[in-house]
Image (tube, rainbow, N blue to C red; front, side):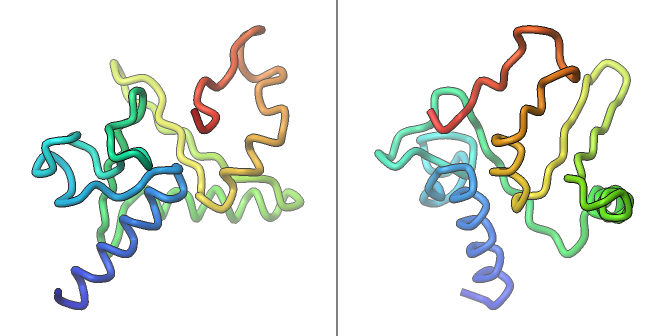
Length: 124
């Protein structure tokens, strides 16, 4: 395994663990389990999540997130959350992995989402 392949593999394993998943053997559609990069601990595809890791030297979204993080830090250490919108696509929410647990603790929905809205996935 080349140095780049090993780094990419390690990053994929790390990303899947953050989501509470294991890395799919052979990765993606080659596994015959799921098209995603993560599976449940019992070796089956997750019923509601398809996680796909993209490892690159640079992602354009990181530059955007760095700007949001700098502004959040300047405002007293707030948690940076980047939202991306595109016509006919909806909203994409970007959150740093290190802030994942913090968001679950905060009553993030209060006043932001419609009454009664709740995040559905909490480690099911």
